[in-house]
Image (cartoon, rainbow, N blue to C red):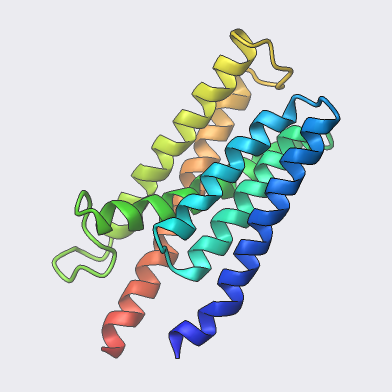
Length: 188
C-alpha cells in the first residue's frame, strides 16, 4: 500500500528532475552563468532517487533545492528583504532530514525511530546536521562573492540571520521527523 501511495510523489520528483535538466540546458544555451548551478542541482537531486529515500523526502528535496537554486539564478533574493530569509529557513531543514536519513541508513547516526534515543535526540541531531548545512551554504556564498565575484547580497548581519533561521528551520524539521518516527513506532 505504501508503495502505491508513494508512486505519485516519486513521479512528481522525477518530473522536477527532468525540468531541472531542461532548465540547465536552456540556461546554458543563453550563456547565463546559472547553467553551472542548475547542472550541479541536477546531480544533487539525483541523490534522493538513487539512494531510495522515502518518496516524500525525495520530492521535498527536489522541490526545495530547485526553488533555492532558481532563486539564485533568477536573482529572486533581491525581490524583497524577507525572501532570502525564507529560503534560508526552509532549505537547510529539508536537506538535514535527507542527510539524517542517509547517515542513519549508513549507520553513521542513529535512525529517527531508534527506541534507545530520548525524545529530544532526533530534533537535536537533525538540527545539528542542518546547522552544518547552513554553515556550508554561508561558506559557499562567501567563496562565491570573494573569489568568483558573484553578485550575492551578503554581509555580517545577513550571514548571522541565515545561520539562525537555517538552524531554526532544521529544529522544526527534526521535530516533524521525530513525530513521524514516534507515530510509526506506536502503530507497529
